[in-house]
Length: 546
Image (cartoon, rainbow, N blue to C red; front, side, top):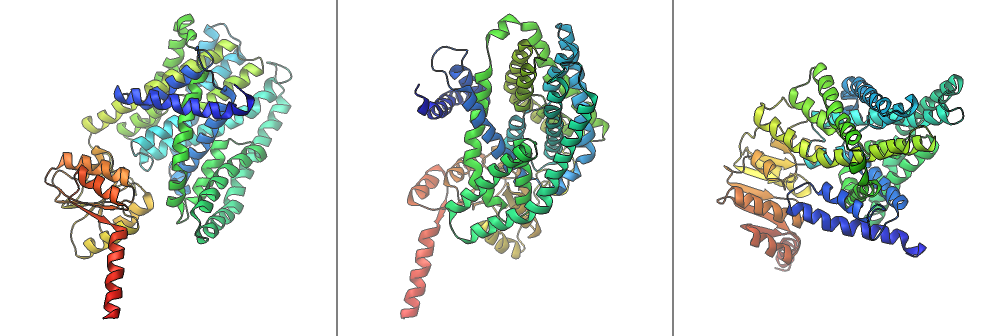
């Protein structure tokens, strides 16, 4: 392939084959992640046919990690982070220690050095940012207590890995396994200084500048400029954090999103980055598949199974025991433990560094990649099993402040989906008359506003049948769909009509095609904003002339 088309070829091959494999996975009713991983194997260097550029794929995947963490930060306030510090900090450190010890024992059993075994164990101890967040977002758990603990736990793991990435070269770069205690202490002090400096900079300087910049851009009225500003902030802060402060891209992006999440523009910023987040997240899974050599499964089945067991069983049991020890429910412990039962991007970086320093044998890197791929493949299955058990075998756990997804609706007569500009006016009219109203909303700020107006709030994605049923749609009389997205509204109408054939469904649309589609799917009434606006304006004009 010519050099000047390598990037294009990598993107086209990655997304194209990922689409085909994800469609096949959808047909077989398995997680699309399995399709993305298989796509990576097909375009990787270990299978015949087209071979994409692995280095470029990993860089593109890193952009996905940045955008994903930025999006999480938009919905994760400093208050949320501090609320889970008492379990996230000691829990993550203890869980890392357990997985580290298990990895060391496996490495020594395979005949590696202590240093190599230590690097191997460390690589098995940290979960993948992308996998964990995609699992939580797919089940609307980011805003729950379980989700906050998992994300806080992940951040602590990332900080520990940042420290490890800086200390490993200082320990083994010049003198091999002997290390240098003075240099090690100096390196640790420098890392701590940089991390503190980064956090201080973000909360003292960036906390004032970034929201001001975004508000100024919003006032220009240019959607294109606003989108560009959001992407520039997310990528720029992440890159600056890595270059200047030596922290990870993901951590820098998370703090940038958390700061902007305190502004009124956080919802719009999240919407503008969503398409890119999804596309680059796919490339992340494809890049993982490209690194995997299937021959390792045949050549070293025993070590591969032992590695996967440490990741999926050892880490999960340790996390479960720790969460329960801190007094949380079994449901929370199960969710947190299974969300951490996989490894990803930091593990690859550690493996590459260990091999580069001649500390970790190449066999260790192969086992880490095999463990990552297999754990990522099995994680959605485990997550689904755990969620089903939580819902069927246990009573609902008390919702934390702001977690309305566990509350039962008081009056399901009228269900409103979306509490944005249109939905908030509808809610004010209905609640103002004293009528019961149940609102489904997936944004924290909008959900809080709906709750303040007197409505019962279900926090979740209304395109999911389980969320619609939770809102009491089986016994409701009317469903009002106030979201502006026509595709999602069509899916909601179809599922709602299947749940309750007698339901009266009123939706909004922005074009004649959307009106026709919504009616075809089962909507009783569709309000087209432009048509209603035109009618009102013409009516006012005729009144003035009369």
